[in-house]
Length: 302
Image 1 (cartoon, rainbow, N blue to C red):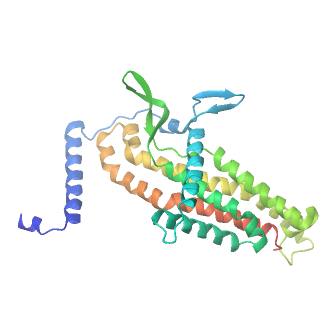
Image 2: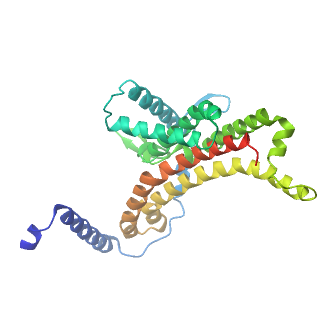
Image 3: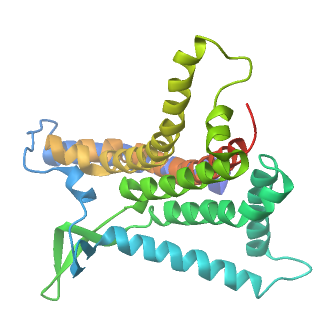
């Protein structure tokens, strides 16, 4: 007891978590055993399907993907407007964070384009960065949007809670990538003309028969940028959400082994913290800076 009193609060909490975890494993093992039964009915991937909630018109439906996009758009605009109206000489923490994001977006633009282009495209790069960042971050807030599963509350069916990001649906990053792809190709044609832009894709010093091999590869690589922008953002966010779900209980349900859910829970928490603390911001940064690089590269010669 004397030794326990002399411990720091942080160490007491750490020991308490470890003891609770070990006791939890023992309780789950005693209550449910350590033998599982495969569950062929449960399909965790169905939580990412976009089931229509309300049909609006034609192919347009209201679903959780649209909801998350709307939330991200409102939050992005709201945060910027709120901060812009409360700018202070001695900034508070929120203003400091927004100013840092602004400076980062500015450096992404000016480091990869000339001054004229940077001034022109900075608002787009900054908007892409902040919008994707906000969209990624709200994707880690559990909301009742899983239409494939529901629970009853006062007799009303409520969709189950889940973490979901609009970027886990390939259509969202593909749309953003198409906008970037269209923008930098248009800028390239404006700067060099159609023929000059095609010539600018070929590295300097390449000529003769080598053009037969290099030119198709350069054209292909130009289109592969569209795919790489899309897949990088989509696959990283989807994989992260799936990993969190699996470690937080999906794997235990699939194998019918309750103790496994408790065993993998700390790993789920660790992955969640890693995704929120690093991946959400990193993927937004990568998408924005690659967009700036592609725009700057389109108007310059290799």
